[in-house]
Image (cartoon, rainbow over all chains, first blue to last red):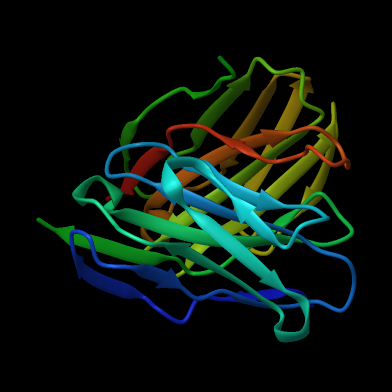
Amino acid sequence: AQSVSQHNHHVILSEAASLELGCNYSYGGTVNLFWYVQYPGQHLQLLLKYFSGDPLVKGIKGFEAEFIKSKFSFNLRKPSVQWSDTAEYFCAVKGNTDKLIFGTGTRLQVFP
Amino acid sequence: DVKVTQSSRYLVKRTGEKVFLECVQDMDHENMFWYRQDPGLGLRLIYFSYDVKMKEKGDIPEGYSVSREKKERFSLILESASTNQTSMYLCASSHRTGAYNEQFFGPGTRLTVL
């Protein structure tokens, strides 16, 4: 069965610090990978996605993620976080069906 | 601008009541989904519909049923609400299998069962 692990449950950073959130999945076949973000009081929205091609994917608001097939990983990165990045971040994987499997989420708090 | 709307942002019900949560999308998507979101558990799929009148159980269907009579509308039904169904409920929609079938989410309904 497919599963997604997000190892960091709660991350606290100061503004301008670099960010890396881990995401590992288990699935033997071809995958599509997603990072979603939920800002306080707002709906879940897509940050970036990987379907094929260049394993380094760039998303909105300066975020990027790298798909490393050999490690079954899709870590999210941002070189310099802002207070407005405070949110909950979810990694998700899609295999050969239309269903997404989500990780448990990482709550990011950025202090000025 | 694409939209998924949910009938209520906040709902308070009593144990044993029948509860209806409504979701409407305007993107002509084939797929619609109901999730519940709980702290520390992420999003868990309750039910999935890939076409009108078609449905498939997700990971936690017990205590829930769904209805999809029209393509744009997907309803979640709690036949007899219980306190352990207090949660945030999220609706989503997407196109059927393809390169661009990301899911679009509604704002959520926070349900409290007393």
